[in-house]
Image: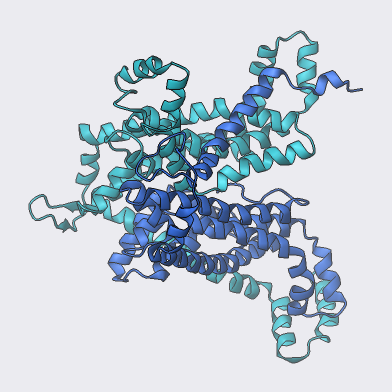
Length: 271
Length: 319
């Protein structure tokens, strides 16, 4: 029925789509070039020469390492918290209908739907009122709050596809609730949980708007970057760190994509 | 129905050995307990801690600050909201909303070809490429993306180099001479701020648009052209109305994210404030939490209205 002519895109559309994609990617690729430049005072283009020495300089910077360490710590704890809370929420919402079910979905989405600065200021003023000093845990509190939604989104989609008869069959065959969870439910939702967890990790690792308000004097890697953006002191080191951050965040995204590729493509919808 | 359920439980209970078995039996007999156990931790976290902080913030917007002592006056008043209507503050709100609207409009225009091509023409490997091509910029670091634009817009950066290479420097200079959107250089002009906003939020527009466009049956478009419509008429009367929910869904992101951002205009742009910056500076150095809190109510109200409109247009199915 369908001739070749019909599915070929008009040239103008092809060009416009290609330009759109280029617009989204070229700026990031530029960072990769700048990481190797020999110029260290300005952002001169084209770079006068190429060198690897800034990688060594960045490697020997204790402030970069401690910022990275804090970021990894916060992202790991937040991811674990978000995975537990998000899975519990998704399981509750998808397995039964109860009063206020819609309200719970809304509650989970709210931290993402509201501008980050509102979440940040609200938490900061709450810490002030309750006299809680800034620590790793105040950062985690903020991060886990908005990470729940990505785990929840992934898990809810999978729970919906998980047929109830599987659970019933397991129970009929004599497994108790825990055994059913361990041997039937968990293997079925594992990949979506992994995907949700990775996205949560990427989200937390990169977060800066809420973090500046809940971190106090501590510097996560994004806060370190922000300082450099506002008051540039070490441009070459910043270039290298920026490139590494891009590479580090790409890995979990690619992994999450491959984990959910065959199923529903919910991974990462709505950051 | 209840009876048969009880019978079934009777058969299952015999399997319950040990503590784990007993607990699981309780959950089976009284699902409400399990439901409550599952809901308590997330509700404590999100419902009590998070919503509690939001409400505390809202409450503070009804306090005011004493101009002389700089201390917060804990009497309920609408004075702080009155301050929002100062010409200076009104200016900030207007500027932010205008920027959000322009960014949203521009991202619809740039995102459409990408979303349409991905939804209608891309197949197999190309489809995956388009999906990742949108996903990777969406998830790559927000600060790195801003940093990339700082490199691009810098005086000695690639954009100026390009204009000089093509001998079009006069064009850029003429553009920068235009009042309001121009400035000393792109990196301190509204145009620069706009470009970065557009760049950073664009993927948020592409994804819901693509989801909506994928639901438009291809034969609708063929039928339209068979009936003699020009491509523009097909676009205007068939494609656009059907894609509108996706456009609105995407615009929720671009609009809301622009309203609340305070880092992009701080790094690339003129020194004139946006709502997010105003909130940040009032709570920080100025210590004027009531005014900061009142400012945060503005985007919430605007977004509430926006979401209400979007819901009426059925945009949530495309999310």
